[in-house]
Every structure is written in C-alpha cells, then in structure tokens.
Length: 149
Image (tube, rainbow, N blue to C red; front, side, top):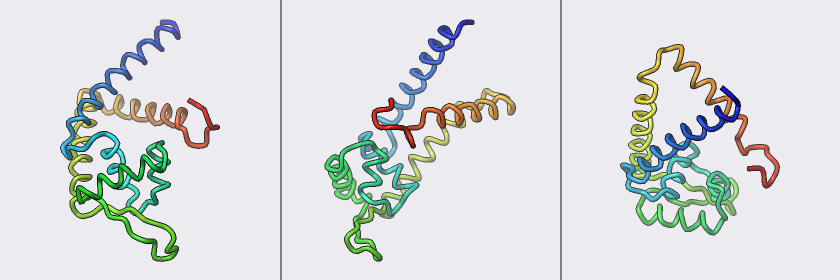
C-alpha cells in the first residue's frame, strides 16, 4: 500500500471519528453549544484559569471568549472572581452546577472512548493509544510558529 493510499485511509478514518464526535457533542448531555462546551471542558481541567488562558485554549479572540464566559455565567455554570494575589487579574471558576455538567460530559466522553477500545485486544489498545499520543504530539500547535497549520 502506498503512502498516498495510507493518507487517504487516515483522512477517511479521521473524518468519520470527527463526525461521530461532532454529532455527539452537538447533542451533549449539558446541552451547550460547542464553544461553551469546549470552554466548560477546559475549565473542568484548568479551574481558575484567566480569560486569556481560556481564549488561548479555544483559539479565539478575547472578545469572543468574554461572550462565551458571559453565556456560561448566565447559565450559572461559571463565576468570575478577582485573583487574591493580583487583584487586577480575573479567574474563571466552575460553580457546583458547572462541575456537575463537566462531570456528566466527561463521563459520556469516557463511555465513547471505552466503546472505541472494546473490540480491540489489550495489545491493540496499547498500540492505538500510543500511536494517537505520538501523532497528537507531532501536530500539536504548542510551540509551533504563528500560522503553522
């Protein structure tokens, strides 16, 4: 099989997985639009992040991030508070409802990943996870020059 064939097969498999997760996320248990869902998921892992950190993670402008956080705050999922050390800085934290929403979405994601791994042997599971980690590291935008795809 040629490299071109492998690239086409990889593109098709990736497209299928992305489509499945995109549809599932659009019907997420928290009933949040994708931008709010991704912000919630980030804050679930980085509770107390600054608006700049959230914007950077989401790869959106600061004004867009403000709108996303405003919508989450109106739904009672996050709060903003001044940093106790640097009073000029704002921290965004999940509320109890926000933590419950995060936990339910994470549980659903875990269920989907387990379903993906279920038909594989232990050896295949280790191999696919290791390879996915390697690919993710290779294409991660961290430490890449501006404009890098």
